Length: 280
Ligand SMILES: NC(=O)c1ccc[n+]([C@@H]2O[C@H](COP(=O)([O-])OP(=O)(O)OC[C@H]3O[C@@H](n4cnc5c(N)ncnc54)[C@H](OP(=O)(O)O)[C@@H]3O)[C@@H](O)[C@H]2O)c1
Image 1 (cartoon, rainbow, N blue to C red):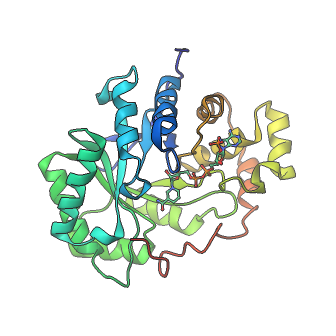
Image 2 (image 1 turned 90 degrees about the vertical axis):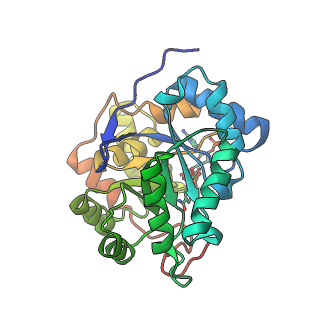
């Protein structure tokens, strides 16, 4: 095992803290998936992002047990699928996730999508609060929630999420959501932080900054997330790209760099508008 860089952490509004970069695991399945999780942990990753719907909680749990790091030093996130919204359904779904992972607690449990047409995310949220009270979940949060969904959760339950995991990359910088999160003490997590293989890393803006700093274009994009105070969770199945993606704490961007990258905004990658997109 090579020496691992230490990843800084960001405080959450509940007294816990979250690593500043994590591993996305969508698509990491089977033996190769477990191996990718182990290589990431051995390279220094401490935050692992899965979901019941990724069908790889078993692989993530196996990776956690196989890696040479104490469970207590890892931060495991999983997510409640839309088909399990509702109070009792959420408690049962969590049991299924915990059994799949083979762990006795998770660090962060998220409502994966609000599915507002179904209108059960507040009931799901009350169950998340209960899971936190029982101690089987350390921190609770949401994903793909808009400011209106967050306003409603806070008004009806008086429990603000610790995290909102949203689509965030240079093509969709989410300035209004990040501003709302900052005002409400919610940490922003960035999904598809590299814009999932789009052309972002080959834009002249990004490559010029990379050349100036002597880092890769991917590292520039991930550092942009860090400068914004957001937690990127890049997915990579490859050990050397995993290491590259974690190695973003030895350089900094200027305010002009950050602004130039944010100006690459062109819109969502696909039709993932949380007011209309549903996932079950
Ligand atoms: N909450 C939600 O609704 C939601 C939605 C989407 C995603 N997510 C989470 O966010 C995670 C990340 O998003 P994502 O997987 O959609 O996309 P992403 O992390 O933006 O991009 C992943 C792609 O970039 C490649 N890549 C990674 N590092 C690279 C590097 N250093 N150089 C060149 N290519 C590189 C990967 O290929 P290789 O594997 O071959 O390196 C893969 O094709 C997911 O895995 C999942 O955990 C959550």
